Amino acid sequence: MIRPRRFDAQNIILLTPSAASSLRPPILRRVPTTRLLPRRTSATMAGAEVSGEIFDLQNYPTPLSPPCPAISKEVELRRAMSAASRSSFFVLTGDDIVFEDEWLAVVNKPSGVYCEALLSSYSALAPPPLLQLPARQDTSGLMIITKSHRAAAKLVEAFTEHRVKKTYLALCIGRAPVWGRIRISSGHGRSRFGAWRVYSTADVGRTLPGGSRVKHMATSFELLALDGREVRAERAEETVAAVEKAGLPESGRTHQIRLHCQYLAMPIKGDVKYGGVHEWEGEECDFHALHAESLMFEHPVTGLPLQFQSPLPPWAREASRGVL
Image (cartoon, rainbow, N blue to C red; front, top):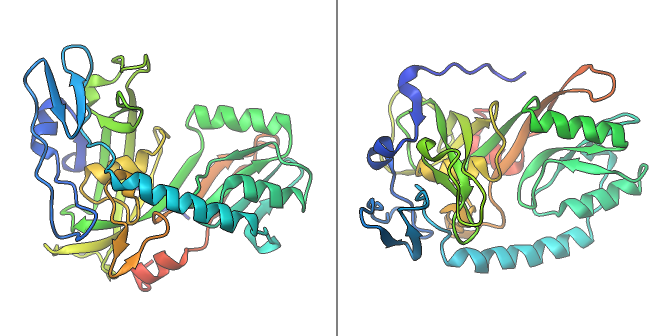
């Protein structure tokens, strides 16, 4: 069962222009993790260059999170080639199927495998699937596969209206946070170069370069373990590995959890696109440590409530050391 979350007023962060200047955290370098980049300063001129990107501050809102580091393209290309090779040999087994009926299936996806490879493998076991919701190459965990147009349309509607409840586990690297539970509310949109970025809540609804608009996103986090220890009142000051649970009750924006972890100065391990380390304790990270742990939704045809829990991936078991 998913534990209910209660959030006190002092544990809610609303990203506004005034709050952003005081809450904006330092972003970790990729290696070593103990060295920090200086905080970004707010620009006051009509046009300013920040971290290699130029914004017209009179016309467009300025992102609160930094652009992708240069090394991210190299690392992501290498991972894409590895995922393509791994996907060509991937075979879905019966143990990977968590639930199945005549309208849909829920499967447990491994990290580093393309969704297309999973769908292709599933079609060898069952009728050709129509739609998969949601999963990305590096993210592991629960994924829905629909078998009929009726089920697909109903599930798309449910996701759009935020009636599908999800929780994720993330292994983050950074300074130990001073909170146990927290809720982040901010804007979400693309920068002028197309990358997803965090914006102030005051910018929600404003137009971005290219014609899109800043949308609202909110994420609730619960800190579960620090360096394999159960979370207690005392907080370490050194760089630590933290296991966090994230839920998305209000929105489901692209890369939402990854962006908010970056903004909290606790980027996900291996998530080089959003400030995460690509090497940790002498080993290269092959994927970002994000796992779709649980899924709750109403069956699109029968209307029955469904709830599923995914087994912990190896990195979560190792990082939590029995705490979870």
